[in-house]
Image (tube, rainbow, N blue to C red; front, top):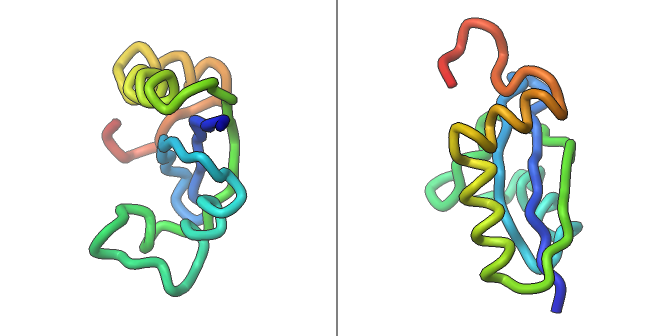
Length: 93
């Protein structure tokens, strides 16, 4: 089974979220769903979300390692170079 590491960006705030999943289409739909559980996920209030980057991984452990790296300082810098600003102006990283 393939796993994905993904980066979504809020259309309304410009904030980014990094996650991993086995079903990318389903997961993006969940982030944008009005039935999305705000107590369980941190993305409810900042939507709608758009997919800005994803990577295919061969295992969940590989996806988890890559997700952790993308959330690290080095990973955030890499994303900033690849995609542009990591956060909207005026908000701390």
